[in-house]
Length: 238
Ligand SMILES: [Zn+2]
Image (cartoon, rainbow, N blue to C red; front, side):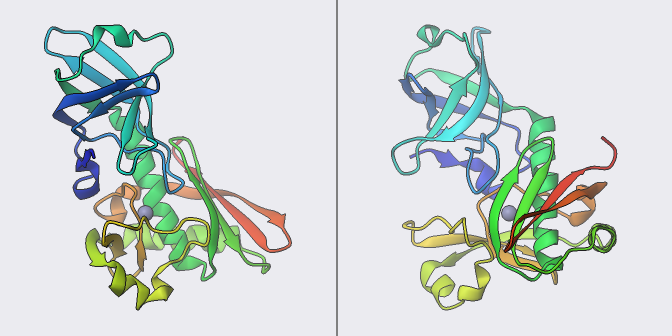
Protein backbone atom coordinates (compact mmCIF):
# COMPACT_ATOMS: atom_id res chain seq x y z
CA UNK A 1 0.00 0.00 0.00
CA UNK A 2 1.43 3.35 -1.06
CA UNK A 3 2.00 6.00 1.60
CA UNK A 4 -0.22 8.90 0.50
CA UNK A 5 1.78 12.04 1.30
CA UNK A 6 -0.76 14.27 -0.51
CA UNK A 7 -3.44 13.45 2.10
CA UNK A 8 -1.56 15.27 4.86
CA UNK A 9 0.01 18.05 2.79
CA UNK A 10 -1.43 19.05 -0.60
CA UNK A 11 1.35 21.62 -1.08
CA UNK A 12 4.11 18.97 -1.26
CA UNK A 13 5.23 18.81 -4.89
CA UNK A 14 8.09 16.29 -4.61
CA UNK A 15 9.37 13.37 -2.57
CA UNK A 16 11.96 10.61 -2.60
CA UNK A 17 10.55 7.11 -3.10
CA UNK A 18 11.38 3.53 -4.04
CA UNK A 19 9.84 1.66 -6.97
CA UNK A 20 7.94 -1.34 -5.58
CA UNK A 21 6.27 -2.62 -8.77
CA UNK A 22 6.39 -2.06 -12.51
CA UNK A 23 3.36 -3.16 -14.50
CA UNK A 24 2.07 -2.51 -17.97
CA UNK A 25 -0.24 0.14 -16.54
CA UNK A 26 2.61 1.99 -14.87
CA UNK A 27 4.84 2.30 -11.82
CA UNK A 28 4.00 1.82 -8.17
CA UNK A 29 6.04 3.58 -5.44
CA UNK A 30 6.28 2.96 -1.69
CA UNK A 31 5.23 6.60 -1.12
CA UNK A 32 4.04 9.39 -3.38
CA UNK A 33 2.94 13.00 -3.77
CA UNK A 34 0.88 12.07 -6.88
CA UNK A 35 -2.91 12.19 -6.30
CA UNK A 36 -4.72 9.35 -8.12
CA UNK A 37 -7.87 10.17 -10.11
CA UNK A 38 -10.81 9.84 -7.74
CA UNK A 39 -13.68 11.62 -6.04
CA UNK A 40 -14.21 13.53 -9.30
CA UNK A 41 -10.71 15.03 -9.19
CA UNK A 42 -8.28 14.37 -12.04
CA UNK A 43 -5.00 12.56 -11.31
CA UNK A 44 -1.66 14.34 -11.10
CA UNK A 45 0.92 14.48 -13.88
CA UNK A 46 4.65 15.07 -13.46
CA UNK A 47 7.85 13.04 -13.67
CA UNK A 48 9.98 10.42 -11.98
CA UNK A 49 13.70 11.19 -11.80
CA UNK A 50 16.44 8.55 -11.55
CA UNK A 51 19.73 9.16 -9.76
CA UNK A 52 21.59 8.83 -13.09
CA UNK A 53 19.49 11.54 -14.71
CA UNK A 54 16.87 9.43 -16.50
CA UNK A 55 13.44 11.09 -16.54
CA UNK A 56 10.11 9.31 -16.89
CA UNK A 57 7.25 11.66 -17.78
CA UNK A 58 4.04 10.74 -15.94
CA UNK A 59 0.84 11.63 -17.80
CA UNK A 60 -1.71 10.60 -15.18
CA UNK A 61 -2.16 8.86 -11.84
CA UNK A 62 -4.76 6.17 -11.24
CA UNK A 63 -5.91 3.87 -8.48
CA UNK A 64 -4.81 0.29 -9.10
CA UNK A 65 -6.82 -2.91 -8.80
CA UNK A 66 -5.65 -3.55 -5.23
CA UNK A 67 -6.89 -1.43 -2.30
CA UNK A 68 -4.51 1.45 -1.67
CA UNK A 69 -2.54 0.84 -4.88
CA UNK A 70 -1.51 3.98 -6.80
CA UNK A 71 -0.29 3.66 -10.39
CA UNK A 72 1.89 6.36 -12.00
CA UNK A 73 0.91 6.16 -15.66
CA UNK A 74 3.79 6.99 -18.03
CA UNK A 75 3.33 9.29 -21.00
CA UNK A 76 2.71 7.54 -24.34
CA UNK A 77 5.92 6.15 -25.82
CA UNK A 78 7.88 6.16 -22.54
CA UNK A 79 10.19 3.13 -22.05
CA UNK A 80 9.51 1.35 -18.75
CA UNK A 81 12.25 -1.18 -19.56
CA UNK A 82 14.89 1.23 -18.26
CA UNK A 83 13.41 1.21 -14.75
CA UNK A 84 13.95 -1.37 -11.98
CA UNK A 85 12.03 -2.47 -8.89
CA UNK A 86 13.95 -1.34 -5.79
CA UNK A 87 15.35 1.72 -7.55
CA UNK A 88 15.32 5.04 -5.66
CA UNK A 89 13.63 7.87 -7.56
CA UNK A 90 12.55 11.43 -7.10
CA UNK A 91 8.81 11.96 -7.73
CA UNK A 92 7.79 15.44 -8.81
CA UNK A 93 4.29 16.60 -9.75
CA UNK A 94 3.28 19.27 -12.26
CA UNK A 95 2.78 22.06 -9.75
CA UNK A 96 0.62 24.30 -11.98
CA UNK A 97 -1.80 21.46 -12.71
CA UNK A 98 -2.03 20.55 -9.00
CA UNK A 99 -2.59 24.18 -8.00
CA UNK A 100 -5.45 24.45 -10.51
CA UNK A 101 -6.98 21.26 -9.05
CA UNK A 102 -6.57 22.61 -5.50
CA UNK A 103 -8.21 25.95 -6.37
CA UNK A 104 -11.12 24.46 -8.31
CA UNK A 105 -11.66 21.66 -5.83
CA UNK A 106 -11.81 24.08 -2.90
CA UNK A 107 -14.19 26.30 -4.90
CA UNK A 108 -16.57 23.35 -5.27
CA UNK A 109 -16.76 23.23 -1.45
CA UNK A 110 -17.77 26.92 -1.49
CA UNK A 111 -20.50 26.06 -3.99
CA UNK A 112 -21.73 23.33 -1.63
CA UNK A 113 -22.05 25.97 1.07
CA UNK A 114 -23.98 28.29 -1.27
CA UNK A 115 -26.31 25.69 -2.78
CA UNK A 116 -28.05 23.64 -0.06
CA UNK A 117 -28.85 20.61 -2.19
CA UNK A 118 -27.23 17.16 -2.57
CA UNK A 119 -24.44 16.75 -5.12
CA UNK A 120 -24.90 13.98 -7.66
CA UNK A 121 -21.88 14.49 -9.88
CA UNK A 122 -18.52 16.18 -9.82
CA UNK A 123 -15.54 16.67 -12.14
CA UNK A 124 -12.42 18.67 -11.35
CA UNK A 125 -9.73 19.29 -13.99
CA UNK A 126 -7.00 21.88 -14.43
CA UNK A 127 -9.15 23.83 -16.91
CA UNK A 128 -12.58 23.80 -15.27
CA UNK A 129 -14.68 22.15 -12.59
CA UNK A 130 -18.32 21.17 -12.65
CA UNK A 131 -20.71 20.20 -9.91
CA UNK A 132 -24.17 18.69 -10.46
CA UNK A 133 -26.79 19.48 -7.84
CA UNK A 134 -29.89 17.36 -7.33
CA UNK A 135 -32.51 20.13 -7.49
CA UNK A 136 -35.09 21.68 -9.80
CA UNK A 137 -35.05 25.30 -8.62
CA UNK A 138 -33.25 27.77 -10.91
CA UNK A 139 -29.79 29.03 -9.87
CA UNK A 140 -28.68 32.63 -10.24
CA UNK A 141 -25.18 33.02 -11.72
CA UNK A 142 -24.60 36.55 -10.43
CA UNK A 143 -25.67 35.57 -6.91
CA UNK A 144 -23.38 32.52 -6.92
CA UNK A 145 -20.45 34.60 -8.16
CA UNK A 146 -21.07 37.20 -5.46
CA UNK A 147 -21.18 34.41 -2.88
CA UNK A 148 -17.94 32.82 -4.10
CA UNK A 149 -16.19 36.22 -4.17
CA UNK A 150 -17.35 36.91 -0.61
CA UNK A 151 -16.09 33.53 0.69
CA UNK A 152 -12.74 33.91 -1.13
CA UNK A 153 -12.31 37.44 0.25
CA UNK A 154 -13.21 36.08 3.72
CA UNK A 155 -9.90 34.18 3.74
CA UNK A 156 -11.32 31.21 5.66
CA UNK A 157 -8.80 28.56 6.77
CA UNK A 158 -9.20 25.15 5.11
CA UNK A 159 -8.15 22.24 7.30
CA UNK A 160 -8.56 18.48 7.43
CA UNK A 161 -8.87 15.94 10.19
CA UNK A 162 -9.65 12.24 10.46
CA UNK A 163 -12.81 10.91 12.12
CA UNK A 164 -13.85 7.34 12.81
CA UNK A 165 -16.34 5.59 10.54
CA UNK A 166 -18.61 5.28 13.59
CA UNK A 167 -18.52 9.07 14.00
CA UNK A 168 -19.42 9.48 10.33
CA UNK A 169 -22.30 7.01 10.64
CA UNK A 170 -23.61 9.00 13.61
CA UNK A 171 -23.61 12.17 11.45
CA UNK A 172 -25.04 11.15 8.04
CA UNK A 173 -25.64 14.82 7.20
CA UNK A 174 -21.89 15.19 6.70
CA UNK A 175 -22.06 13.36 3.39
CA UNK A 176 -23.01 15.96 0.78
CA UNK A 177 -22.41 13.91 -2.30
CA UNK A 178 -24.88 11.31 -3.55
CA UNK A 179 -22.46 9.96 -6.15
CA UNK A 180 -19.18 9.90 -4.27
CA UNK A 181 -19.17 8.07 -0.96
CA UNK A 182 -16.17 8.62 1.31
CA UNK A 183 -13.61 5.81 1.11
CA UNK A 184 -14.33 3.12 3.69
CA UNK A 185 -12.60 0.16 5.22
CA UNK A 186 -9.62 1.90 6.82
CA UNK A 187 -11.57 2.64 10.00
CA UNK A 188 -11.22 6.37 9.52
CA UNK A 189 -12.50 9.00 7.11
CA UNK A 190 -10.90 12.29 6.15
CA UNK A 191 -13.04 15.38 6.75
CA UNK A 192 -12.39 18.79 5.18
CA UNK A 193 -13.47 21.86 7.13
CA UNK A 194 -13.71 25.40 5.84
CA UNK A 195 -14.21 27.13 9.16
CA UNK A 196 -17.78 28.35 9.48
CA UNK A 197 -18.52 27.59 5.81
CA UNK A 198 -18.45 23.87 4.93
CA UNK A 199 -17.66 20.51 6.49
CA UNK A 200 -17.69 17.23 4.55
CA UNK A 201 -15.75 14.01 4.02
CA UNK A 202 -13.33 14.42 1.12
CA UNK A 203 -10.08 12.80 0.01
CA UNK A 204 -9.03 15.43 -2.56
CA UNK A 205 -6.41 18.17 -2.56
CA UNK A 206 -7.38 21.66 -1.38
CA UNK A 207 -5.88 25.10 -0.76
CA UNK A 208 -4.98 26.06 2.83
CA UNK A 209 -7.08 29.22 2.86
CA UNK A 210 -10.02 30.26 0.67
CA UNK A 211 -8.09 33.40 -0.36
CA UNK A 212 -5.80 31.12 -2.41
CA UNK A 213 -8.77 30.15 -4.62
CA UNK A 214 -8.47 33.59 -6.22
CA UNK A 215 -10.45 34.53 -9.32
CA UNK A 216 -12.69 31.49 -9.82
CA UNK A 217 -16.13 32.22 -11.26
CA UNK A 218 -19.24 30.41 -12.44
CA UNK A 219 -19.00 30.36 -16.22
CA UNK A 220 -22.17 28.41 -16.96
CA UNK A 221 -25.28 27.00 -15.33
CA UNK A 222 -27.04 24.21 -17.21
CA UNK A 223 -30.26 22.27 -16.67
CA UNK A 224 -29.02 18.71 -17.30
CA UNK A 225 -32.30 17.03 -16.39
CA UNK A 226 -35.53 17.75 -14.55
CA UNK A 227 -33.71 17.23 -11.24
CA UNK A 228 -30.12 18.21 -12.11
CA UNK A 229 -28.57 21.68 -12.26
CA UNK A 230 -24.94 21.74 -13.41
CA UNK A 231 -22.65 24.58 -12.28
CA UNK A 232 -19.41 25.03 -14.26
CA UNK A 233 -16.46 26.93 -12.76
CA UNK A 234 -13.58 28.56 -14.63
CA UNK A 235 -10.69 30.91 -13.95
CA UNK A 236 -11.71 34.55 -14.44
CA UNK A 237 -8.06 35.35 -15.28
CA UNK A 238 -7.88 32.62 -17.94
ZN1 LIG B 1 -12.73 18.32 -1.28
